[in-house]
Length: 331
Image (cartoon, rainbow, N blue to C red; front, side):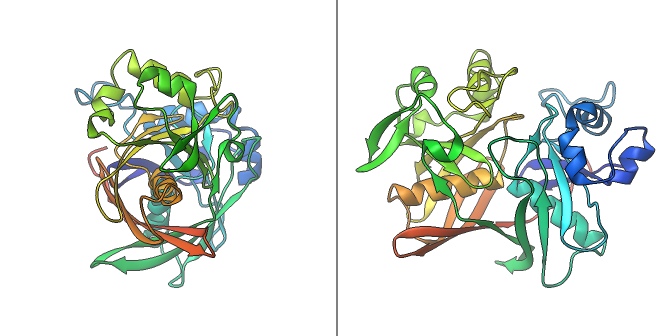
């Protein structure tokens, strides 16, 4: 019923709307109405599709067998509507790895045109328009079959993500932000660049590798509780500095056009990789002068994401993410 895919260590389940209805979940006919009524069905969908079967959860694994659930398509031809459901039942505006996985599922179902297609992500966030469109094109990079995702033009700064109560500071002679809850956890986490690329991100810029948190550290108490309070919206988190929640990244320059990153997602927690997080990291690195426009490699525990930055007249005008996904038979 639910098919699981792996994209650089990020695992999502994919299920059709009709399969959920056949399982007894009262899902509305349209993606728009599904998003508006998600409180009525999303937790049941996650429990059905993403909970570990009783007695088979591997030792040391996360509480769910995937990082989320992709519901769709709602049509048999493009544009394709879908929902990205986090394991806490909330909806995401965008997920690079999730959209890569959904594109692979469409390809296997014979629905993805050779020239690509438009995907439309429906959500219920009040601070962003819905649906969020993404253009997807099948491609090959370095002998690997995958997809280029056109994520559009990023926005920068606190206003772009609805952040409140942050201070302006300088990093590499560029104005960035100091998010007090992060800086209080670690003095090295003082310089952050807010980026919106469909969904909101807070990229903390580091100059010392020792300040990069590991995924294992981010799963330990009390750090996981502190990061959840920062990243998650209320009532799970504190919604500070972003009332709607924010995805957290830590980034460090690792050479020409290469950035090392860690990710803590709102609605999920630490993750091996994230496509939109990698895109936000590359965008933030461009803004502070760490990288130039062109291809940027963002290295995460789950793998390296190629990002293509497009610049015109000193402005970042577009971001493209290359992703690839395979079936995950172990989830």
